[in-house]
Length: 165
Image (cartoon, rainbow, N blue to C red; front, side):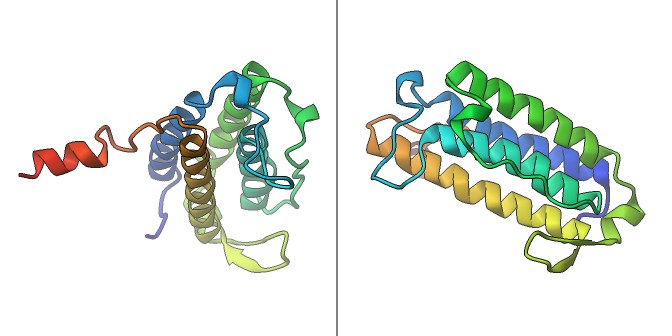
């Protein structure tokens, strides 16, 4: 997939992030800081990480600026309401940055925190893959605590199977 226009990417990314946001809404507030094992990330860590990495690494690098990623520490946003507000605020800031990119910006090369040069459109594609990875973690963790994860595209696997007969 080649990202050729910022408006098209923003439309795609907004829908993609909306599905992650639904997964976040399924997290019980009282389990926000639950972790599956010692040393593993909590739901809250993942929510804060997705917010911060989008805004302070991917968006900054897309503007050819260095990463300013602050981590995923609880001090950034403690509690469900604060974590969701942090997530939403940083996403809005990121979308504004992505939407302002020109076609020339998308074909420019940026430098990642790993000191790898990559075209901006490929960097944004990597952001999507990164988000999918962590959304999958949220879905798995919801299962571990006995909570259903929202279907990605409106139907569960069972509903698709039933409608496929």
